[in-house]
Length: 43
Image (cartoon, rainbow, N blue to C red; front, side, top):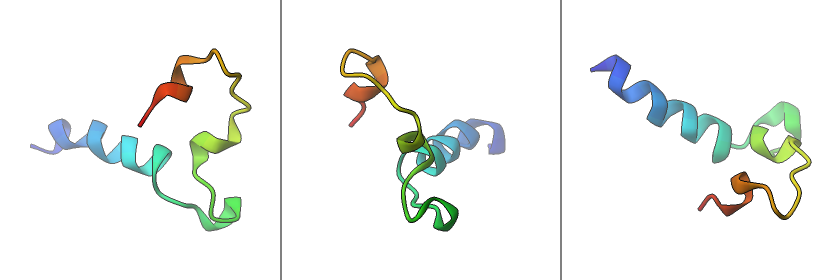
């Protein structure tokens, strides 16, 4: 069960959870993604 939940947890941690050390930004926001990067399409 843990192995199945790990991808879900990692997704939330990196895409949605604000981090105090990043001034309440998400880790993914640190990447200077261009407009044509597929990661930009995440919802």
